[in-house]
Image 1 (tube, rainbow, N blue to C red):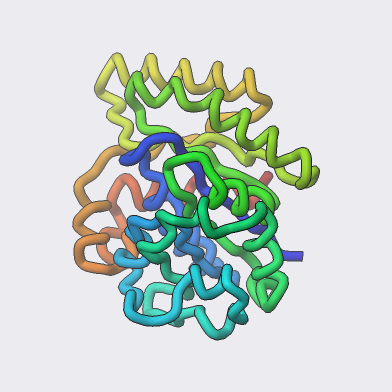
Image 2 (spheres, rainbow, N blue to C red):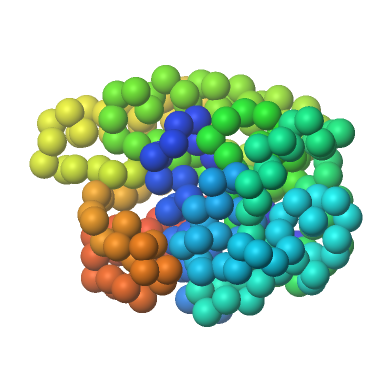
Length: 245
């Protein structure tokens, strides 16, 4: 049975998409077959992986297309691209099981499926969590990120009513500056909050670096562009921890 991991956040700029991209890439480097699904109307994951945005996408998958008809095999990995029409998903999707049913049409060929969720609650996130076996919460190392964790935990708890196997894999803290006392205080607070909701901060926090944005701007994987960068090394360790769980 494959693992389906949904990366979720409650605020743009949390590093959610970067986390999805880097985890997918690191799993591939370990020999796993990995599919990235871009469920965010901003399509940042699709752009970063250099997908062709004019071709079939995740809306076609949700509308009944076979997985093989919408997957793009790029030099950066396999992806089902996002669509700007995902903004209307709440009005179009009739239930929370459409993505789960879609992934039953060929998803078992992959060891891992990583779903990059939108930043807002709604039918798309509910579909992702209904299909997923686990969720990763991403938060930026800043005070205002703290407030959304309870909301995310509640969203996951609601999804577990129909997907009892869903679990929180942990919290990934991004854009961390270990030189800052405030950042260290925030990290400690995130650890306490993680314990409250029955999970943990997956260490280490992802250190801030411009190399992340440079790699995405050049449409290449971070570990290809800057393998010795702090973020690339941190994500490598994060995936080591995930595989040990």
